[in-house]
Length: 67
Image 1: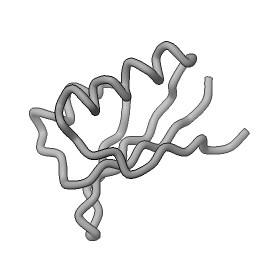
Image 2: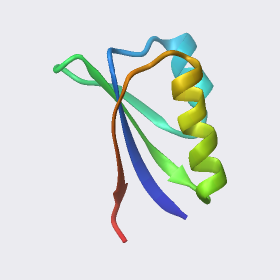
Image 3: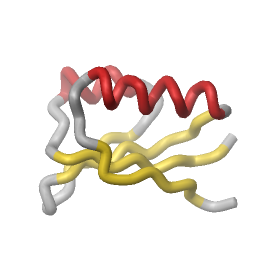
């Protein structure tokens, strides 16, 4: 299972962060939020990204951490 880091524009409050269960949500000093956690496969990654878009969040970037 790969670790992914997904950055979105703006800070996420607790009610929104709960929707990304299994991922750590950190609000940075730059005004962006970072979601970090394990993603089992491409289908789960798609589901996380769809949630980002469904919530109207602006995607800043997606990165795979490690190998």
